[in-house]
Length: 237
Image 1 (cartoon, rainbow, N blue to C red):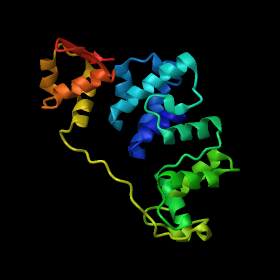
Image 2 (cartoon, rainbow, N blue to C red):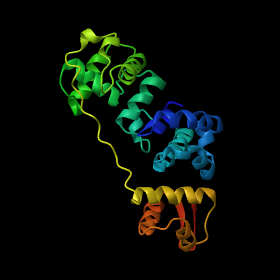
Image 3 (cartoon, rainbow, N blue to C red):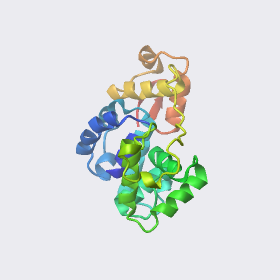
Image 4 (cartoon, rainbow, N blue to C red):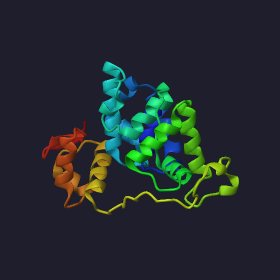
């Protein structure tokens, strides 16, 4: 559940996740259920969350966990980076680690009075979480950043304003452009088209997904194991 929530929330508005998450978990309440799922049904329930490679990695992880259990190092799982691994370790398994997201970076930077990033941010978070109940600490800092310590801070409402060195410290995270017509968008269109039904040829697929990037998208998706087929027919893996 924690991993699904974290993967869905990555670069996605919370309002979308709140709609999709309960339906997805109802259909696939366990790793085994997701591992055995039809890819078309999984894509349907993923809906408008985007970044369909995340769903592919999530289904791969479900297979691994079902067959071999959870690994000690969660970053060996497909698509699981340091933040997601720390969040799952903390919230699901109670590991004493800091799960540093954008909210943590903003709050901790203001507490120390300078922009934190990289190793310095990780070290600062690790020092602060030490000796605490990590899940509660991570959630508290996350909520503080989301509700009070916003990009434009509401310092008069902050319960720990006395800890703050400089509330004006803020570096907005880079935004990823949509890039209409990009390879990423063509990949998503291919997967959504094949989720409705397999197609008998690349020409048939091109009638729905018309783009100069179509061949590149098909090659990349097949290489990553998200689709199977060739010019004579394509389907989801």
